[in-house]
Structure formats: structure tokens, C-alpha cells
Image (tube, rainbow, N blue to C red):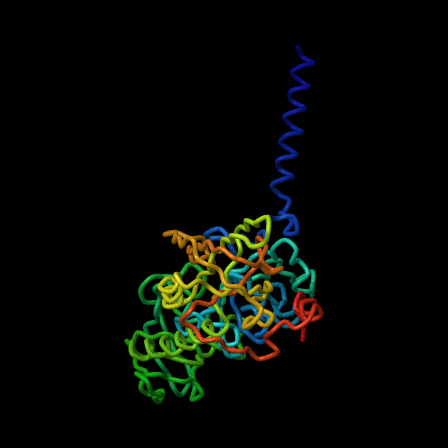
Length: 391
């Protein structure tokens, strides 16, 4: 009996030691769950990062951010945080959907990042083990204007000192979970663009008590999370004008390149053709989805796309699908529009496979030939596009 008690005690000690070891050991990012091709991220997932956008590859939707602060000596010694946009990932500028190419270099941005999807682990080359951040595929990239406004936070001007070049602000409205949520002092000077209505005005128009939105940029104290103000929107008219201008740019871009989607399911016929189900990516202006819904009776033109959303010669390399079903979900996951479309094709393309991306055109949009550098023209182009080329 005594021997049994001692054996039980030994077993309990070993179990406790193992549990303590398991709790102390940090999870290996390489073994963490990765998105599968065609899969959308879970709500609330992703690692928040912010910093200055200093490098972009607009054709392949990739870039590099100098992260805020100096954690572990990263500011001077570490590399940029290079990233790729997830196929369903979206940028925002001035409160409207955007492409990376729309965001000026030097803009301070916020994003939520995920591990590379399965099969895309080498898209971003490794730089520094000490400063490596495994989450390098972005679901979202937003300027300060978009990030804070979308979450209900504005800024109230507490004081402005033009001689010292300082602007004191405090949050107004809701408080963000990530980002600057308390009183802060920014650098401001005669390079700052101050918008009132549809015009630029002088700095002396900025007065204590004003409720504003800001876009931030680098200043010499950035390693200590200090920023300068690049743009300041004084009133609602100025903010609405900036948003509407960017919205129009976005709508034109998507009409020309076509709305991106992912293939959910393919039902091949025995003698050619198929029924294909796709989900349209989210984050687009609602007018684009409305155009498609209103013209679905005439069918959609569907071009195969790479995970960078680049197509080949989509004006010609496409097939027409007859819409069999249009479904809309009220609570889609991040990156999804919640719009799922089933289409019947008499012929299919090689790229029509589950998990692959496509771009879709409706009858209201004109055919436009894209610039040659945006198109995939050979297998070598496809191979080069698979990995970010570092500066």
C-alpha cells in the first residue's frame, strides 16, 4: 500500500513538472495554425503592427514597414517588416478602400498580420532571426485617418504652439484597442497640409477645441514613438471630400481590373464545362457589388488570377459564366464580402481550381487593356512573383 502511494506521488510530481515546462515553453510560430488556400481568417485574429510605409511593390501587393518604437534595438539594427497582402487583404486611405499604390510612401499605417498561408512560407525572405516577426501577410493596411475614423475615434485639439511646432491632442469619441488611445503631442510645421472644406488653409486656422482627423509621418523621435503631422482635416466637409475622392479612385480601379474572388468549389462535367462556386472578397465599395447583382442575369466574365491578384490577359483569357445562384451572408468572416455566386461554364480555364483566385467583370464595366507590367506573361513572371524581391 505504501509503495502504491509513493508511486502515485511520483506520477503527480512528473505530471506537474511536464505541465510547468509546457506552460513556460513559447509556441513555435512555424508550427502554429496557418490559413489554407481559399480560407478566410477568424474574426479578431491577426497581430497588430504599425509603422511608416517605406517600400511598396504595387504590382504584387507587397511592401515594407519601419515599425514604431525601438523594441530590442530594432529601429537602428533591425530590418523593415516586409509583408505581402493576403489575397483577401485590403488597404484603406482617407476612409475609403484603396490599393497599396494609392498610399504615399512615408505614411504612417496600421495593419493586422497573419502567418503566411500554407505553401507561401517563402514569399517573404527571412531577414534577421533576432527581429523576425512571423506574421507577415496582411489582412489590412490603413492610414491613421481610416484606422481611427473606422473605429469611432477622432482627436480634439488641446493646444497648438506654432513657435515650438507642437500640437497637443486628446482622443474624442470611442477609444481604440490598438494604437494611440491617450493624450499625445505631435510635431507640426509649415509642411503640414491643413484641409478645410475642399481647400488647403494655413496652420493658424487650427485652434483649441477643434475635432480633427490626422495622418502621421516620421519625425526624428520616431524610435521613441514620436510623430509629425502630415495632414490634418479640420471639418466634416474636408473629411467627406477626401473620402469621396479616394472612393472614386478605388471604384475605377476595380472596374478596370475586375473584382477579386476565391473559388470555393468546382463541379466538373463529364464532357467539358463545370459549375463553379466563388466568394467575392470583402472591403470593396458597395456600388461594385450592386453593379454585379443588378446585371447577374447577363452572366459574368471570369479570369484566372494569381495569389497577388494579377491576371494574364484578362480581356481575352476569360470565360463567361451563367449565374445560377447569388447568396449573401449577413455576418461574413474578415476578408469576405459574404457574397457567394454559383456559375455554369461551357468551358473552363486551367486556373479554375478550388482555393485559387479569380477576377470577375459584370456587364456594366468596359473592357480595358491593363499595362503590360501588371499582367502575367510567362511562367517566369509567375515564378518571380512568388517571392518578394528585397531592396
